[in-house]
Image 1: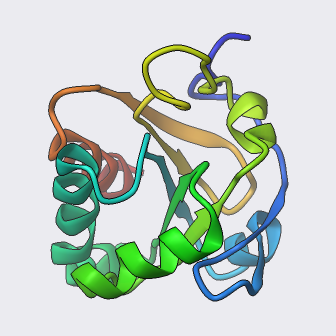
Image 2: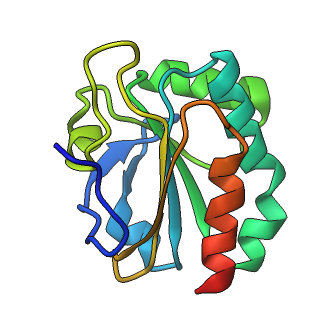
Length: 151
């Protein structure tokens, strides 16, 4: 399946966060745009750098009225450990089955479970921007902010 492109409608979903509480995309979008970033594996060097960059830009995301949601195929307990270890101030969603990753077109079977991809989703579920970079961890949050500031 191809990765969702800008202009597409983001599929709605519900997944548990790092505390096991259900999070539904459509509910989150009622409070404004959502930056949904898929990362391959919690607590690896690249994913830690990316997640901490999203954390460090909390004020900037708040200024543009956007919420951050991290998502990987890691189980709830590993998401909780990752969040606590790095003081992450946003939900980390557990997509253990990979169904949501598949719906967004970022699931894969080789190397890592998902492609490192960020979706900037407007409150009407319209995808404003897609950031795909496996190696430049900071570009995800930076480009998401730029897209939100430009909207």
